Image (tube, rainbow, N blue to C red; front, side, top):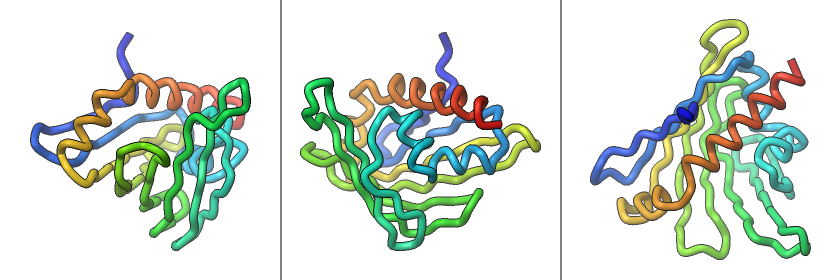
Length: 155
């Protein structure tokens, strides 16, 4: 099965480009990234904080069935243009990976379709390559597939 979320990584560069088209209006796609209850549904994680404004912060946390935290990520939002752009840092806590910089761009294709482009810059090529060795593409595709399903119910 073809993965709908595309990840482009050029050799010897410390960045990746992620793109995905959705059968959702751009306003709804943007809302899926900025409203805590929707984020929790498609990401499968708890939103502890989500301050959608310049210099706002966010924190996500996932626990296993025993209630033990297995994943926590946080960052700062640097730019927030509704329905268009979010620039933020992203850091996975308790991992060897340093903070990364993400530029999320939301684009209207038609009244009912849209596209997200995520340009992520890593501290080094080595860290980028280590991230790509994780089941990153499959996990992101699964999450984006859930985003589409949830978005369909919100239309």
